[in-house]
Length: 127
Image (tube, rainbow, N blue to C red; front, top):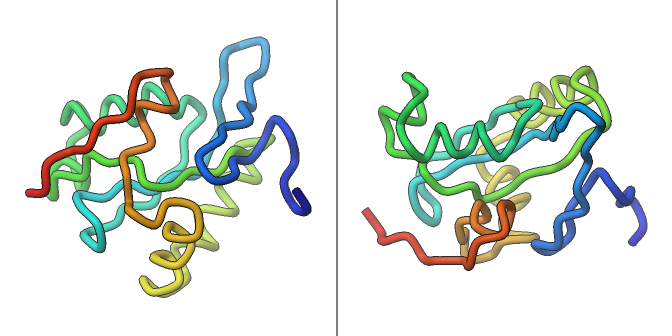
């Protein structure tokens, strides 16, 4: 696909995993509590464990306060520098732009975490 680099990006839920020898999964991601709900944009070097922590409420702050347990969008990056720059860019855009970005690849705002870690997808109940 044009613009997608194997090993870095995702396309329509098909993960092309970026992983180095130290088990690093560098990504920018968005969490939400429901379709068209509250959105959090973050960056991490270990996406599966970071999302797990958000889901379990281990991380104090915004995602715990607003119950953001769904991974609704993510994008792999080659380096933390690139990922941090991408996160800053995304955070500057309007909510409508972010919603469009999510819905291009995940129109129902399904939780992508199970697919990320090889589990069967399950629908989370609406709050």
